Image 1 (cartoon, rainbow, N blue to C red):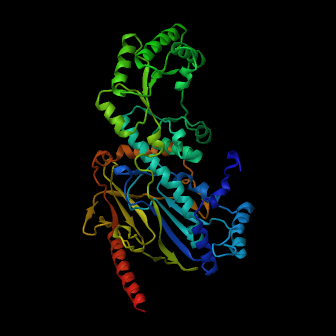
Image 2 (cartoon, helix red, strand yellow):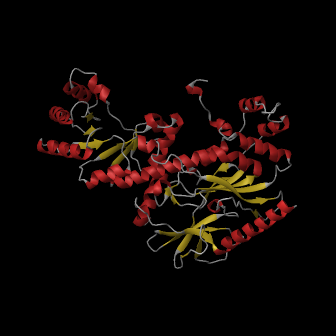
Image 3 (spheres, rainbow, N blue to C red):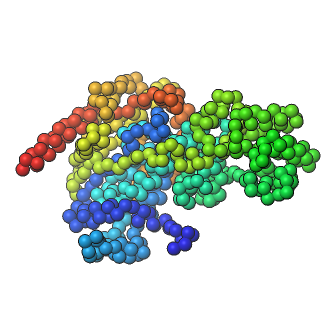
Length: 497
C-alpha cells in the first residue's frame, strides 16, 4: 500500500486494539449483544503540571461514529487472522455480525475548546456493550492527543501575551496523521496559523511560511538571496537572518527593506532561528528603528515553549511573533495525556434502570466513579467557573451545593450561591451526529479563548497552579463508598468459595 492509499474514512473500525475485537466477539458469543453499557472518558492528572486541560477532538466524534463500519476489506483481513494456539481468531458468525454492524450509540461530550479537569467525564458513551467496547481505542486516540496539544498550545499562547503563535511542528510530528492533529488542535488552542498546507486545505486553517536557510545558502551571497526572495514574494517577505551572522544578516535585510520601499513594497519581518533570542531581537529592533523601519516585525523560532517565551519577555525581548515547532508538536515534556475509558454502568436488554458498577484496583487513585455521569459547572456572577460537580441523576439530591473530592472524601467544596449549567452536550444520537457534534473550528477556537479568559489566573499559572474544585455530588459519593464496600464483601466471599 502506498502512502497516498494509507487510509480511508471507514478504516477507523480497524484503528483499534485487537482486544476490543476479541472482547466484542466474546460479548456476541455470550448472548450479550443487546446488553447496554455506559462508559466515560476521563484523565486523572492535568497535563504539564498545570491547572487545567482544553478539550479537543470532541468535535470529530460524530464523524468517527458515522464512519465506523466494517467493509469487505476489513472483514477479509479479520478472517485471515489466526489465533496463537491455532485456528481462526474470529468465528464466521461474528464476522457476519460485523458486516452488518452500525455504531448505534448516544454520546455526550465537553464541547471542543472548553476547559476540563481531572476525574470528570470528558466524554460519555451509551449503547450496546459491543458498540461501546469497539469504540474505545479509536475514541481515545482521537481525544487524548488533541486535548494534550490544545492544552500545550493554550499555555504557549498565554506566555506569548497576545503576540502571534504559529504551529511549525509538522516535520517533527509523529507522522502525517499526527501532523494534521497537531495543526487542528493547536488552532483550537489559540495558534494563529500552521505551516501544514494539508491541514490548511482540510480544516481551513490559515497557513504561514517563508524560506529556510537552504534558500540563502543556494545563492552566491546573502544579499542576493534576500533580493531574490523579496522579488519573488513581495507580499509575504520574511527574511531569515541567522544563516551566517545575525548582525550582518540584519544589515542586509535593512538594505533590501529600503529597496522594497523604493519599489512600493514593505519587508514584513525578519526571523531569528538561533542564538540568544532576547539579545538578538533587541539588536534587530534597534537596527530597524534606527534605519527608519519601525514597521518591520521580529519573529523567532528555535525549540520554543511556554517557559522560553515567558523568559524572553521577562528579559524585555521586543518579539512580535513566534514559530513553535518541536516542543508543541511532541507536547514536550509530556507525550501523552493518559485519558482512560471506563465502564460505569450496565443495563440488561429491555430494562429501564441502569446498574452502577465500580472498578476498585490495587491502587486507590484508580478507583472509578460509578453511574451514568454528567457534570454541573458552577459559575460566579462574572461567569467564571467556580467548581464542577459530577452527578448521577438516579442518586442526586436536588439543590445540593456541596462537592465531595474524588480522592479525599473528607475534603468538600461549597458552591452555594452560584448558578450551574450542564457541561456535557449530546454530540451523537442514535449513531448520527447532532448539530452540537459538528462545531466549526472557529467556534471551537473562540470557545477556548472565552473559557481561558474566564478561568481564574491562579488556575492558569504555570508554577504551582491553584487546584480547581472538582468532585462528586454527595449522593454519588455515598453510592461510590457503598459499592466499594459491597464489592469487597462479595469478592471475599467468592475467594472463600
